[in-house]
Length: 344
Ligand code: FAD
Image 1 (tube, rainbow, N blue to C red):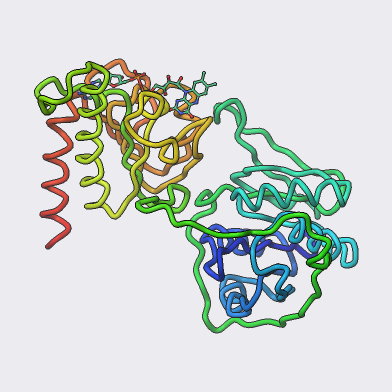
Image 2 (cartoon, rainbow, N blue to C red):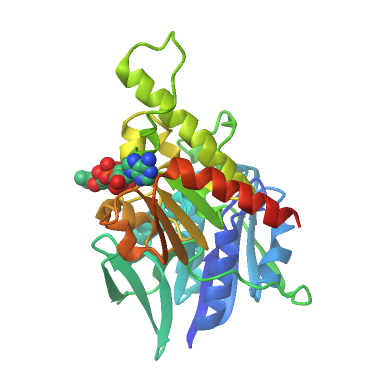
């Protein structure tokens, strides 16, 4: 077993990312002691969750200067603690914040980062990680020769952790490493973007591609005369239909880059090499051909279902279930059948 494995608990205003608990549960499988790092202000309640998922100890940085996430404040504190206490490894969820802190701390600690790994193993005290490369076509096995190894874990790649409410541990308070006056940035405000779904956390994702615009039977309103605008209008109606299927499955809506680039749906929904990397239990690809850059973002989904008019579409090579047909016929029928089944 590796010795003390730390886990950075990523949260927003006290709401932990599920991937933080996945990381704690993964740490438990390779470390003899698991320490959770919780930074913020008034976030001591998070310690219970960390204990329930497997942490033995919590290092709690509770300070006004840590109230808002700022990479400089968080990474400095993590580096200071790691220099003092010499953990064997620090795990992070592969979130924007997790990646950022890991990269900054690696420079302070003169060590390496293994990003977005999907498996972790203890090999005689050294942690070896599996990291998908070449758009997920190859799995490379990687180790860090320096300590601590900084490792970010792909969300949902480690399965759903099980909480044990009877577990508890010790909380040690730690002081902030940088005084407010020495921090170069300040968070001024947050604005909520309505209707955003977290693709990373979704158990079901229903994604649409360029094929979603292909429904000549849909007639746009007379005031839309431009051909490109007609195409976008058709695709948007299609994504409303896809949203209904996603809703019936309590899932999120994703998209290919072609759909995003064509203006059918915002970039936040893009899955793939240059979009989000996801691992849902169920991924439904509608009118998506299955280009390697799209597969890079969803290849590790547990069950893949594809609907495509073209029987030779590459997506069918990866899909467990494939339907050759028009998504405009299949999707409404599927949504109707699911609603009926799920209401029973
Ligand atoms: P297409 O390849 O055009 O496929 C549309 C499919 O819809 C076809 O298979 C067709 O048979 C089917 N179809 C049409 N009408 C219907 C219908 N009515 N019913 C059912 N099926 C229908 N792509 C990504 O997705 N994500 C990325 O992050 C990404 N990053 C990239 C990065 C780089 C550097 C590059 C070069 C490319 C990247 N791409 C990415 C683009 C990628 O190469 C493909 O161009 C893109 O994935 C194609 O999207 P698509 O499958 O929706 O479109």
